[in-house]
Each structure stands twice: as structure tokens, then as C-alpha cells.
Amino acid sequence: MGEAMKSGMVLTMSLWTDHAAQVLWLDSDYPVTADPKKPGVSRGTCAKTSGVPKEVIAEQAEATVAFSNIRVGDIGSTVKGVGTSKTTTTKKTTTTPATETANEADPEVGADADPEEVGADADTETGPSTSTSSCKRRH
Image 1 (cartoon, rainbow, N blue to C red):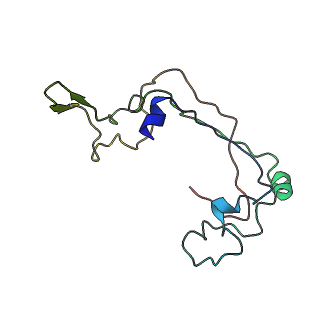
Image 2: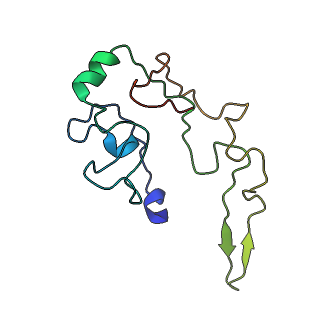
């Protein structure tokens, strides 16, 4: 994974209706013929009959989505308090850890965005989102 990340990566976000599996793999029992008591089968609160693309489109015709606070940059460079641990090796093969590393007790780790912006504004907003009526809402 580390080698792949050195080459750069692309984040892709997609919205779709799933004609093959009705997105049951995401938030229902899947595969639908498997025993829901088996580990990994029960994945959410949606009914096995939910997610029919024709119904989703009809019931949620005005649904919107907002992608926001998307950051671009080297790992550890877009959020304060999340450092990368680097080591340097000399000819004597001694290593020196970087002075700044991530700290589990750091309140900034996993928190919302920094108060100051880093890079260009990448927010895209198209309005409030809605959820299907056959599933419990998640907050």
C-alpha cells in the first residue's frame, strides 16, 4: 500500500442505483439467501426488499448530496495534529524519528476541519440529503 501511495491516488465518489444487488450489500442482509446470524451477513437495518432502483428514483426524486471538506495533499499535511512518522538513516545506520508524530490523546486527531484553510476550497454543495423510508436514519 505504501508503495502505491507514493505513486499518487485518486478518490472517486459515485452515486448510483444498483440494479444487480439493490445496494443490499451495504445496509441489509447480504447475500439475501444467507443466514443473517452468520458473521458479515447482517449489515444494516434495510429490508431485503428495499433498494429497488425504480422505487428509489420515484420515492427520492428530489434527493441531493453534498461532498464537502475534501482535502488534497500529502498525508499529514491537511490536518493539524496528524503527523507522519519519518525516519532518516545515516551512513552509520542510526535512525532519528521526526519530532512531530500523531498522538492518540491529541484532540485535533479525528476532529473536524482545521479553522484555517489549506489549499483551495474544494467544497461542493447541492443541498440537503434524504434517506429512504425503509431504513432507519443514521446520524
